[in-house]
Length: 364
Figure (cartoon, helix red, strand yellow):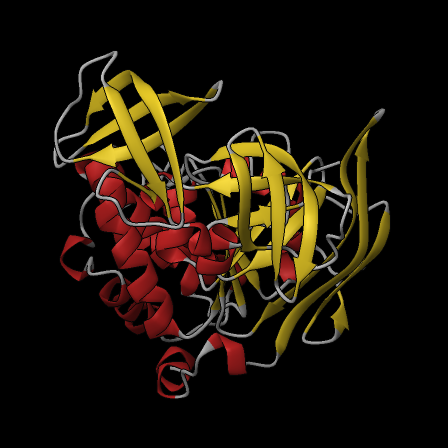
């Protein structure tokens, strides 16, 4: 089976050749431009996630790759072959939908076999169904019906049905959104492991940043139909391309200021918190307005850091292993973790690890 040979040839995504290329893609619905001239590359064997708020265009991009929507401008190529005239059913691409879309009157086995039976001329359907169910750890459930399965099991069957035809690319449209938090966490691990075993590229759509970070080799953050940033999860988090990405990802405090000096990859910014030197985005120059991004974990009450602030506790939220505290400092709300809850009004001294902060552009 082709799946097995792909597993043996598995390499790191960074070393993989290009599988999918989208150039100048535009899609409008009425007066609304859902996708606004994007370029996007998907390497072979990569797990790429389209991440962003509702209405940013991520699902529209997925539907154009699948062939369910046609771009108004631009070109999509798979294995360097234009897809413009290739109907959805002939594209070497399969989609796992949010609803799973299993046939309730068919068994798990027959749901997975359906596309092969519809195609006709496939002699080893039983063997291929067994292999697909083995891949998602559902081989013992072939005789059950969808209503006899949990949500997580139905999701696995939907994946099995999608991989049985051995697609070059698997598209997943928020497939875990209907599951509870614990089940989502469990299936995130399983999905990532499955993608590694299969050795095929996944393009995944979600608005959940934790899910995107847990699964992805590459994260593409979208905003208003455009790509705000494309990078590995660590870069997206620690060096956001602009204030939109910084605000959308994590629980940052964004402090506006103006660049006072530039030296290599660092800059000095004057803010309401004072003058702070930190790593900075390329292109920012003296005199530019910019944003200092402060992540909660970069603030500490332990007296370690290169910048210090004093303020008072405005709120404290118990989160189990720790509390998340909000302190009013210079008219700004700074969030930081604490080992125990703090009373409202408590005076606190905070140290900022400025070397791990980031100065980024203000989003247009």
